[in-house]
Figure 1: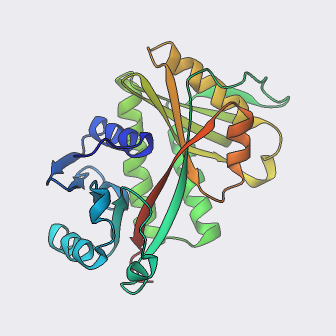
Figure 2 (figure 1 turned 90 degrees about the horizontal axis):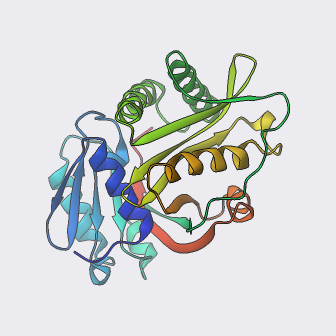
Length: 261
């Protein structure tokens, strides 16, 4: 298996910590997450051989064999394919994500006035679940029932990671309302950020920057010496991460087809 870039490497580390299984088939991996059956990227293929990335038909067929009972296709790619249209003809969209890293603590910022910041515990997890369900209801991106099931299973996995001391999830609260949150998972010496998000009406106030620093300091206290964050290639959040001290490291590619509407 080729050496994976930090985005996929930390993805696999987080999945392994979460109880996922990874089967190495030479030029690709098969990932399964029994604890969250509707997690699309927990049940996927990862093509690790850069020379095999352009064989779209082979990988779509391999996914169908590995996962005969699911209605999505999710295939990670070791590089951006040369023939994107070949994937499109199979109904898959090739997506790019930017991987940013830093070997120093992100820039320290103070918490904006009017917010309380704390690590999620107890009833806070239900607020996190509700926040994710509300966001999907607003966008309509995923089937409501399936997404709710996914979010609840994900929250349980995150709580378990926190209880084991390998992850910390921190939120910003306005009164009793959770308005911003993110997580961080210790993957050996690397720390990987998870689920960075701020409610729209609270953006632009420095909440994300502050949470990035809080979580990074937590991971540093547990032996992490570098930090990894992944974002959609065109996501404006990338500017926030650069200001915090992150620099582009690699581009992560994937091919995805959601379930039928």
